[in-house]
Length: 420
Image (cartoon, rainbow, N blue to C red; front, side, top):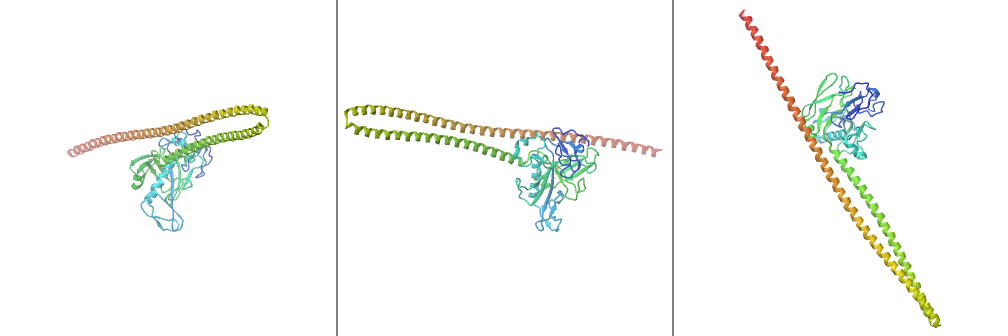
């Protein structure tokens, strides 16, 4: 049941705030509907979601005429037959696959548009192309730069709730059989029956209800918006989740590559420092050789100078030995640091592989849990349908018995009248 017009409380979890004029989702704080300019404020309707975290999808669909560039609005009644252009009148064939793509995109918008913060798709963040539908904009026109299309169809998609054409309150769907739906107004009790082509219903098994009138509540021409109710996740949700995972993985790989590049740069700087130390040592050796040559020349001059030169040479050799020892110690330390860095790198690669496998296993478990929950809901719905069918049969038998008693009483009265 919808809240009465005039309520001002914000919608709670599992509720939608919709425009009372066209039924499209009305963002909090908006003074007028962005689609039909109806004043909102206290007049906005608060309605429960027909399914958990799921609103009705609003679809406007038209075909661009290849003959004149005009448009031809599409309705469920036009499926399976050529559609005449509203401008030039030329018939245009619409492939059933085009209809299927339009319904799949409507399912995706109903699934990924996230006005409810508790919606599981809220974690997709900026990767979700429909995250702002119902928040920053009421509808999205497809195709666009983020969502392509392989068909010549043009779509305008949003979310909200279909309204009763008599009293403009959201209606409740009652499935009759595959592709056939009955809606009932909770205020005036008005009932309407709708049908979708069997080809479309069989191609989109997630479709649970559909409302497509020849005119909407504002008296629009034929081709008014469809309202579609889907169950379960759309195929685009898995694609968006995969894009998000791939993007995050690429970002992590980029960060790891940057870290590796910094480590290699530091290693090159250490190697350059070692080369500089080696060049200094070579220069020291060259100066030592020049000093020995000079001492050899001085040796021929005087014995005393020879003794002094020998003593000086011994001191220089001791200094050289110390320098060589320091170089060997520095080289050993560098080798130890290089080995430690290689061990750290191997550990980081192994840790990243373990974390990746853990994430894959967690996602697989989540998908299994979601499938089990869906099966449980399906079994509960089947049991409820069986119980309702048993009730109807019991009532029918009681009614038949009452009619038999009534006819017997009438027959008895007639018999008495004839006897008199």
